[in-house]
Length: 161
Image (cartoon, rainbow, N blue to C red; front, side, top):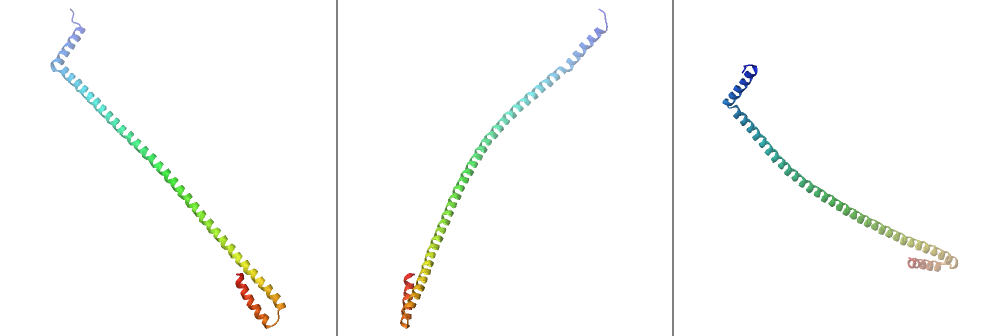
């Protein structure tokens, strides 16, 4: 057997491995690996818990979103109903307003017609009285005629009005 460099490298390697075994480095390596696997397992468990928690929060927000959407739809429906009620109320008030003004206009027209009739009657009566007065004045002479004419003219006015 020859003692060359390869033999010494192999012998050094074996001694180094024995020394590591004697010092318990393999136990420390196994403990470090076990610790690392435990921390990885804990991190995975924490990630799973966080995922479940996030899913619960998501479900909660989805539920709130649907509730808010239904509330918004209810508010919109109420607003539409209120708007329709306001529209009906405004329409009814407008119809009442137009009816009232139509009645007032008809009453004013009726009053104007009756006033015009009265004025035409009065003018016709005055014209008739003047005509009668002129005719009687020409035909009847004297103080008796004047008294008779005045009396009849006064009674004629009251009868025509």
